[in-house]
Image (cartoon, rainbow, N blue to C red):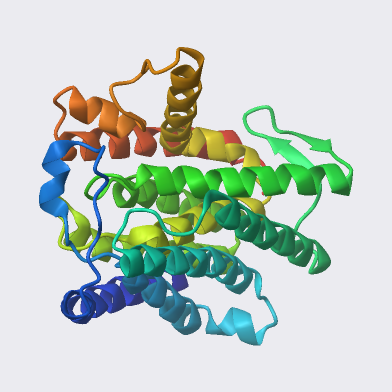
Amino acid sequence: MTYILSFIVAFGVAAIVGQLLIPLLRRFKAGQSIREDGPTWHMSKQGTPTMGGVMFILAIGGAIVVAGWDDLLAGNYKHLYVFLFALVFGMIGMVDDFQKLRHHANEGLTASQKFLLQLAAAIAFTVLMRREGYLTPNLFIPFFNVTIPLPWVVYMVFAAFVMVGTVNAVNLTDGIDGLATGVTIPVALFYMAVSAWFGREDLAVLSAALTGGLAAFLLYNFHPAKVFMGDTGSLFLGGMVCGLAFALDIPMVIPIIGLIYVAEVLSDIIQVAYYKKTHGKRFFRMAPLHHHLEMGGWSETKLFCLFSGITLVLCCLGFLGVMYRYPM
C-alpha cells in the first residue's frame, strides 16, 4: 500500500536529515532562547538547536512526491494543497524563529503580524479548496452523523477561526521535550486510518508521511531533546492538523482528537483573563497547562506519556464518531 511506502520514506528521510541538520544548526548558533519566566530548570536547555521542524517538513514533502506521484499525475492535488497550506504556516514560523535568533530573544513576530499572516493563509486555503470542489459548507457533527448546511460566508468565517485557533493551540503545546510531537503522532495515525477507511488514498499518503516524519523526529526530540522543532515545526504541524480535517470535511472532530491542544490554549486564556480580573493573581501555577503540571512536580517524560496516551484514546473515540461520514 502506498501509505506504508510514504511512512517509510518520510521516516528514513527525516532520520537522515536530522543527522545532517543538527550539527548545521549548532554551527550557525541557531540555539533556542528560553523564557526567563519559565520553569528554572528549563534554563539548561538554553542554546539547544531550534528550527528542527525542517527535517520532518522536508521528509513529508519527499514522501508525498514519491508515494503520491500517481495521484499527482491523475490530477488529484488535495494532499499537495494541504501540504502547501501547512508549509505556509511553517514559513511564518521560520520567519518568527529567524527573528528570535537575530535578536537573541524568545519573541519574534508580533502577535498581530502572526495573526494577519495566519488569517490570510486560512482564507486562501478555504477559497482554493472550495474552488477545486474539495470542500463543502456542510458541517458534519461527529457521532450524530448529521450535517448542518451553512452559508459559504459563515462557513469561511468558521473555517478561518478554527484554522488559526488550531495552529496556535498546537504551537502552545510545543513547550517541553517531545510533547507536541508525541501528541500529534496519534492525530496523524487517526487521519491515516480515517483516510484509508474513506478510500482517500492521497490523504492517507500525506497522513502516513506525517506519522513517519514525526516518528523519526522523536528520535531527536524526546527528553532530553537534542533539537527543538521551533515555530517552524509547530506552526506547520498546526496547519497539517486542521488542513487534513477540512480536506476530509470533518473539522468538528478537531476538539475531540485535539483535546490536549484545546486544553493548552484554554489554560493560557484562563490564566491571562484571571490575572487581569484579579490584578495579578494566577489561576494556574504557570500557563499553559503542561507548565502548571511541571511546577507541581510532573516530569517531562510523564507529561509526554500522559498527554500522548490521552490523545491516542481520544483518536480512537474520534474514529468511531466520524466512521459513517461517507456511505461505504
